[in-house]
Structure formats: structure tokens, C-alpha cells
Length: 200
Image (cartoon, rainbow, N blue to C red; front, side):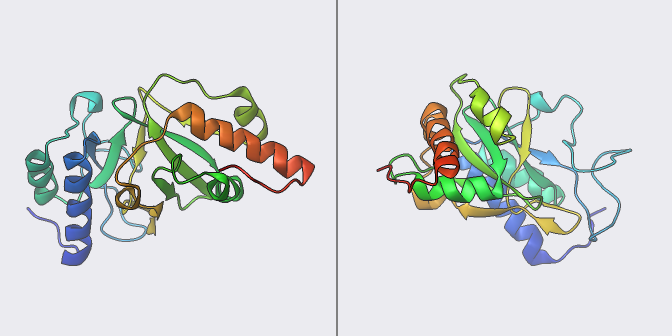
């Protein structure tokens, strides 16, 4: 039985999943809500946003036709499987906003804003560890192999994830994790010293 949700929202979610898959981002279906505080659907016993498949690492696709089929069945949330080409560095919004202004166009990749006060900088999967300065001073997290992330326009409790820098505006290019982390660390020191950013 096909659930009843606004057609525009479903179409937007499906289009996002297909677009991501087409550009090589491994996507997988996530649980979804039909109302702001409604039950999580798509997986029996789901308590929140999570992958529909128990073995979700085996239930990803970069095939746009498969993505079209999956998201035509149900209005699943769109999740990204990290570690297979794309990782995410998550930092508090105030830090993310400051660092984004210091990233040159050559280092700038897609950036998403979560509904919970953090920003996600998407980078290439290259096994670069999270720099300790970021973990200690910015409460940063590296989402890599074994992790998944919600992708816009996925929502939790009616609050959507959204793009600050959509992938299309940077040509779907992903910067190196080390380069982005370097700028994030530099923005920490500039915050402490009060120096103005000048990275080019």
C-alpha cells in the first residue's frame, strides 16, 4: 500500500536520491515520517531515522535507475553511506560558517546544514583521520567507513536538512579531507587570536 504524502515532497526526495546516485554518491533508503511527530515508517520497530535495511552497507546504490525504483516505492529518507567515495566532517554551525568563508573556491565542496546546529562538509573518502584539534576544540566528528548520514531534503521531526553549498554549484567536486580539515583548524586559531582570515 502506497502511503499518502504530498506529491511535491515525495518527488523532491526521489529526485535527490536519483541525482546523488547518478553522481556516484552511494545512497540507501532510510525510515520516514508522514507527519511532523508521526511514527517512523519503512522498518518494523524503527524508533527514529535509520537505514531501512538491517545490513545497510549491502543495500546502497549508485545506479540512478535503482534509486528511481526504490524511491518510487516509498518516500524513504535519503541516506549516504560514508566511506565509499564520500565522507563528512561535522562541526558546530558557528565554526562551519566561519570556515566556509575561509575556504577558497578550489577547496570548497558541498556543505549541508543539519536541523540540530551543525554543518556537514563533504570530502573525498581517503582514510584521513580527524585531526585531534578539531575533536578537542570544535567537537567535530568525522563520518567515514561504517557511518551513514542524512542528505537533504531528509527531515527529522519535520526539521529538514538543507544545502548551504549544493553539490551542483561546485560541479560535484569533493575536496581532500586534509585540506578542509586544515582550514577548519586554521579557523580555530583565528577565532582564538582574533586575526582576520586570509586563506586563498
